[in-house]
Amino acid sequence: MTDSTPPPAADSKWKALALVFLVLLGIAGAVLIALHVKESGKAAVTVVYTEGEAGAPDVNTGDVVDATDPQAVLEPRLGYRYKLFIEDDSDDLTSGIAKIGGRTTFVSGARRGQTVLADVTRVRERVVDANLVRVLSSVDLPPRPPREPFQPSADDSAGHVVDGAEMDVVISEASSQNPGQEGIARVAGLVVVVEGVTTIGERVNVRIVNRMERIAFAEPTGNPPGTEPLPEAARPRSRGFQPRPGDSAAHVLPGAEMDVIISEESSKNPGFEGIARVEGLVVVVNGVPEVGRRVNVRITGRQERIAFAEPTGKPAGTDPLPTSVRPVRRIFQPRPGDPAAHVVPGAEMDVVISEESGQNPGVDGVARVNGLVVFVQGVPTLGETVHVRITERRDRAANAVPTGKPAGSGATPPAGDVIRRAFTPDTAKAALDHVVAGAELDLEILERSEKFPDREGVAKIDGLVVFVTGATNVGETVRARITARRETVAFAEVLAAP
Image 1 (cartoon, rainbow, N blue to C red):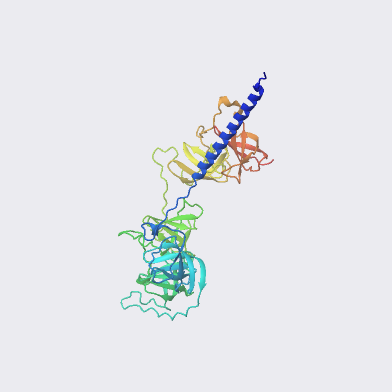
Image 2 (image 1 turned 90 degrees about the vertical axis):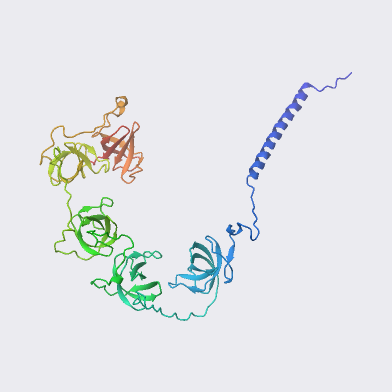
């Protein structure tokens, strides 16, 4: 009898193939499930509004709303696009005028007779602003009949402001629509837009070219303005600061001109602005930082405790200034028992630079006289003795400049007066003991400083970061002197070639 049982080897082979097939089938199923889940996350939700349903008008579908039918009942909406017919030009010919639901709409750049697409950019109570998108068509409309000249009413306080009239006005503010091109003046409360004159406080002779009920347009005549006081109606009315009764600087208002003396440099914009005082009021003068200079200025802005001014370009007078305009010197008065009482403006002495200035490293140095901090301009080298003149003294600090005289021309500070705040190396980091102020080392520049990439490079000594002034070429090895050392950083300057 023959045995038909398959051999064990063949049975194992079929079992292995079945297992592989099942694994592949499982992987394929997992991939299909993942793809199905991912695609289902992208499902679009469609909301359908029927006409008249609440909420439907608030949905911007991106469609163009046809507003060319004057009988259409429409409400202008911000961000919507409209088809418009330009019925007229604006007075300044920069915009076209259309209507959206009866509301006047200014379309910048459009012209009379055009049919345009425009996007609404601003919706106000009575007026709408829109930007021109595209001109669809254009037709020639009959010329407009000449506009009747404005006829002021009998009680119009600006009745003399009519086309062709010439007068002096003072610019009181910049135009909000065309700043840099137009200035605003006021005559008896009437707004006068002056083309080409934007300097606040400037007095200019103008000719009225177009008068309307609430606004007039003017252009400079080229004639010099007068010097006599303006009529009350043409004087600029301050819409901001109003001097309180008893204000000794009440005359310091926009448009006023006067001589002042710069008593100090602006701390906010040194080198660009100077500070003067009128009756104790701080006046910031743009473009005049020179202390002691007398200059004729025009007030451009006034607040309660400060005013702003600019030079008029006119020569300053030579007569003595009123007492109220003379610079007030606020000289520091040392308190009784002040050990540095001799350190006052004008005093000369020798000092020793004990540390680098934290505010202007590499430029200024710091010395100490009887504990008083003295900032020495232009001398950052540690340990250097320099003869200086005190230029300013405050309670806890003084400023000084080198006199150019050799050290020893004045009294040297007594022993122990120079307080050195030298870094004490960590004994655990003996490899960096030699990196102290005054040490000269060869340093390789690895990168440029992020703060001062144009004048400072970065080197490293056993992990210690060293900022090297005067070396910015990456890969260059320079000879430098350590000027300051701290725990995790040091500062150095390149030595001049012998």
